[in-house]
Length: 411
DNA sequence: TCTGGGGTCCTAGGACCC
DNA sequence: TCTGGGGTCCTAGGACCC
Image (tube, chains in turn blue, red, orange):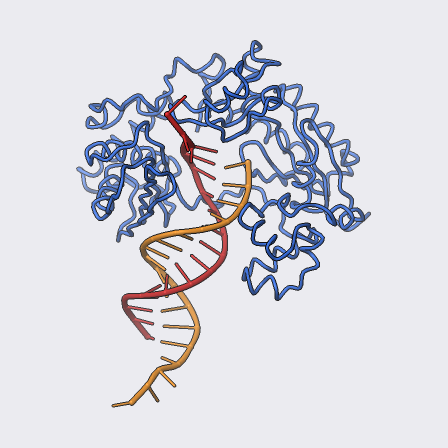
């Protein structure tokens, strides 16, 4: 028995689009794109049929239509994807308890100790592929390697429906000519920096003298060098109960750029409610509020934060703090995007206040949250928000939801 | 009608305390 | 009378991931 780990990375192919095609047979085999419900939306995911035409994630809608006139747009439904995702993740736990969920459509599993029961890594990969295909009609790409970094690299190498296995003895040969930007963790900017140092491939990165890298990138320099060598000792770590989120935020690009304080406040109220409700659902409160503003030119932005003495998670407290920050800001031009984020979090077991006034409010908020969690955002809310004409712009009406998931209690 | 939204982690400088 | 220095918290911004 060898002493190296066996890690698999599973990556659903065109996840959101595949889920939609599975739900609606008429969409199968056709170029579709999942988008947001607002006017200034972009492509979230497109089907492989659409990708053939050059439709890409992040493209503006009009741009996608230009390259693919017959493209079918589907407004995304996060609950559907979350539900499918968690069932797929559960399924993987049949093969090992070591499942690390990386995002809604990706996970690592450590199958080092699963081989005695299930056989070879290939067999486990095929079992998982077959079950995902059978239960959800979705294909996935699987990469198997001695660690997470390489497993992720491997799953990227063959799409869709791929299976690539990197054996320890193949690592250095594979990395020698592999472009550095294929590594998870090296993005556009870092690629540029490294290119300027004449480093283009993983082989070159791995051979670079450490001081040269640490001088420029600090601690990260050392990590990059190891990545270039295919070294990654981080464990596959399943979500623990005490694996806590560190911030809760919500932001949105506005339907039109706004300048009037009154308009800005309407959006801030909505955002504060989204943040507050999510914070309460997680049973956290925070004492730092960050207000983020992106201006009409798209490139200039400001993030400003305020740290309070108390921990808060009530929407109106968040709103008041956000407005307080807004009032300290100079606004040189109209605003394109607004964001509110709660950080510096504290987890708590909710306890009711001794003061009747506060207790009534907490209970009322809890009741509203329950309704909203069940029937969709902004079904009930504070009166001031209902009065705005913006109400509804981000609502997914319950009736819109496709059959089959109405009874699912989304948490 | 150009260009989404959810996060995490790191850095660097300043305030403040002992 | 010079110029200490470590720890912690806070803020603003940037890079990266999906």
